[in-house]
Length: 289
Image (cartoon, rainbow, N blue to C red; front, side, top):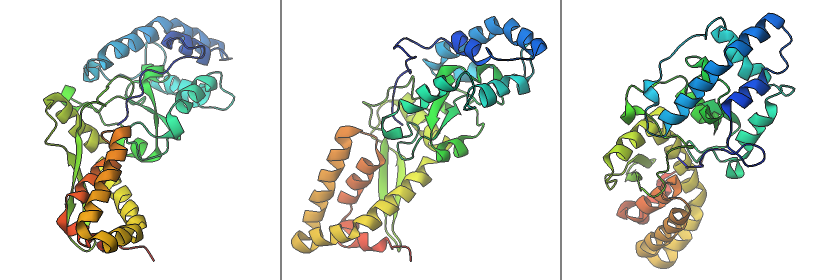
């Protein structure tokens, strides 16, 4: 997970959830619906403010799932996002673009392994429709993360996955992996036992589980090793296992300098520490034919 901080509104200021909501409903033509949507605006602001307050202390599980608000149904609230924010001609489309375009290279901040092509509701809109267009509940995500997360809900703080806008755990090294011998070999990703912060460790485990990152990273690692086998073989032929181990460690350090918890840093570090891998085990990752 990458910490990216709260997004800035156009002009550089903080996002106002009420202003975004009012923008999204600004072109509603149905008079009855418009009256009802305007009538719950203060409640929408209260829900967004509560979210902002609790997200910063890993207490989002305290927010109760709900259906509609007053006379506005869940379907009508969800449509504000689906039609009036996501829609190309929706008045809130500019906010959508601002939120999704801010991540570097469109890297998914939830996994740091996929391309963010959509926005994910951190608290699902199907259960928290009042937060459908709350800016800080909308996180850039790749298809993998959005599919794996679905509408999973935490029951306590330790089950809350990391939030890219609120949880800065960049300084804590929590991702690790081990090399499993076999044909093919496997890189298994785990939460590091070196992580001395218990709360971070528990939430890291929840984050890994929620987005099935162990599986995703193992697939990425297999592809990386397969593509690098020829290079690994050259290094090995010139200097043996010691040379390959040193090379892998240098690559790991390079990735580590960018992001301590990148799967690339963890993978290359584990490979460098594996005698089996450095003595030819890298050949056990087969190319697809």
